[in-house]
Length: 420
Image 1 (cartoon, rainbow, N blue to C red):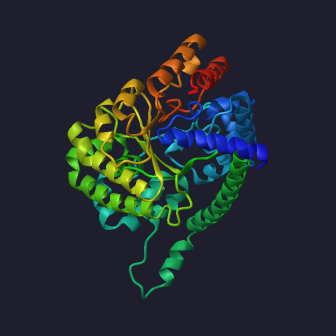
Image 2: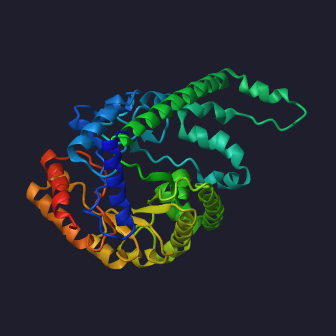
Image 3: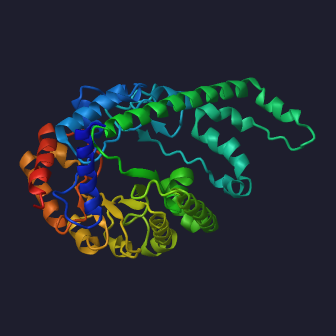
């Protein structure tokens, strides 16, 4: 990193953490990633970036976005950048992406998830009582075509017949699956190494990366990973014991993971991201939210704080009815991000307790006129910026947007969002 870029890096980092400390920096910090917009602006497609294993196209799009708009954080790449070929080998049944053969996903689209819950009603007992066998012979084949041979995998019963396992692994279809797994492993290692190098190069341009690790509420894990959106609702009535058991066991695992995230405190001050998929207004009643969601989220937030990290909690959907509960946490740095919740209400309810961000509708950058975008940026700054504790962020990543609107958004933040 050059001396000039080092200075820029420290200025941006200080701006962000001053806001997190509930003080007023020189201006409102900007945490807006280029997303699909930056890819299109650079002359590429999402499909090209997904199948470019060098990540040079993703890097070029990110650098051009940074040079033009100069946000305060390092941008992420579009989802699964550089991983198209290896994902084809895995062949997941639950996801499609731009360029995947046999799927009609546009060339400039985020990945599309196809909800195919791997845990079926008849397998819930097996999930708890023989989880290893379930994961091998049910879960993985349900999720990915690659692992279909595991459906017929017979785990040897007798330890006195050791060759039985060798026989299972030597079946032709198993041999091919294992060879493909070796290839996938090598490809992912190379892809991850490339991603680390490219991200470091972008950071060296003077843009701090503030995230480190992820966490999740157990009820979200039950829905996201195993049962799907519809089943995880009906399970509250029809499989109550299973939900209770999973949540308590998963919570213990999550807290253990968090407690070991930062053992030597080298990542102090980094943000641990959480996305609250099923906590929004209307998805759970107040009673169910309290029982199955809030007390676990509260404990996770406290655990993250206890190891020197900062919870960064994205409240999807509307969250108006939950705001008072979100206050019930220890004093300390925390970031709450919102999608659709009115930010003037968020400031009123949480402004003295947490750093707030989000709430600016990303869709406005495509549908609205430039003047309206300027007015709405000013309004959210008026509503949220006073006294610090506010970071500007759109409600979602930049997708298809008008260049003049994106320019107006950044220009307004940098001029109207000054504190002094």
